[in-house]
Amino acid sequence: MILDMTSADSIELLADLIRHEHASLDTMTLSPVGAFQSRTTTLDTLMREVTECLAEAFRQRAADDFPMLYFACGKARVGSTALSNLFGMAGMPSYYQPLKAMLRDALVGRPLTPWIVPSAADEPSIFSKETIGPYVLAESLFNPLKLLVEAGYPEHRLHLIALDREPASALASWLDKLISRASEGTLLTHYIVAALSAARVTNYANQQGIAVSHYVYEVSKEPISSIRVLFDRLGLSGSFAEDAVTSWQQPGQAQASNARVIFPSEAAIYKVPNLHTSDSAYRYQFRATNALSEAQLELLERCGVNDVYRASVAGCIRDLGLSAATSARLFGERAGVAA
Image 1 (cartoon, rainbow, N blue to C red):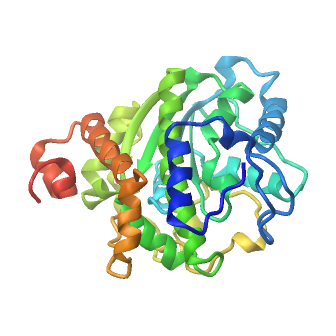
Image 2: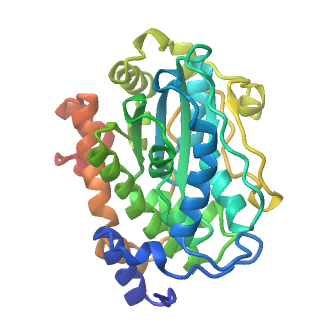
Image 3: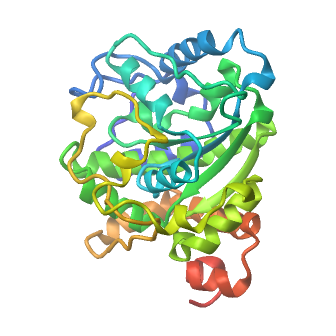
C-alpha cells in the first residue's frame, strides 16, 4: 500500500487505518527520505530488526534481574525531555529515547547497538522516555513498548506513563521547532500519525496487562503537586523531593549537568538548534497557537487527534485523582467544566 500524503483526504484515510489498527500499516512500503532514511523497507521489517537486537541482550536474563522500568511515551513535543531531567534529578538512571535511536540506525542500515539495561541489583528502578515522530513515517508509527515486550522485557516490570499535550499547542511546537528538518505539510501529516500512534501504545499496554498512568503536559502548570501525585501513583513517593522539581542547574546547564540522564549516540541531522528549552526547574511552557490555520485545526478534529487528547485528559484526571476544581484550572473546558 502506498498513500499520497499531499492531500487532506489521504491523511484522513491514513488516520482511519491507524485508529482501526489495520494490518496494512505493518507492510506498506516506506520509501527513503533524505538523510533520515536511506532504504526502502516496511514497519514490520524495522520492528523485527530492532526486536531481535534487543532480544540478544535480554535473552539470558532472569525476570527478576530486570529493573522496574517507568516508561514514558507520547508524540514528540509533549514535555518528555523535561520529565526525563526530573526523574534523573530524583536519582534514577533516566534514558533518552534509546529505542528510537535503534530504529533510526535501522532506517539507514547502520549496525544496531542494543540498549543495555542495568541489573535490578544495581538499579532497582529506571526511567526511559520515548517519543513518536517526527521526521519519517516509520518513527511516527512505531510502537516502542511492543519492542520491549516482544524482545522479552517482563510485563510486570513495566509501567507505561502515557504522555500527551493539548493538540494545537503541540502541533505549533512541531511547526516552530522542526521546520528546519521537514516541510510544514510533512510535519502536519506525521504529527497526526504520531498522536494516533501514541494512543495505540496505550491500547497495547492495556492488552498486555501493563500498568498505565496517564500524564498530560498541562498538569505541569502546577508542577510540585502534579509530580508528587505522579510519584505516589508510581510507588515512588520515597524518591520525591521538591528540589528535583524546583531547583535544577542554571538555565542552559540542566541537561549537561544531570549525570543521571543518559543520551544515545545519534547522527548530526537530529541535532536541531534550540529544540529544547533550557530551564532551571520543571515547569509548564506556554505555546501560542495563533499561527495555525483553520484548515489545520479542522484536520486535527476530523482525524481524531482531539478525541485522543480528550481521552488522555480523562485518564489523567482519573489516574492522578484530580478534583473538579483542579481539573478546571489545568484543562478548562477539556475537563468537562468551565475554564
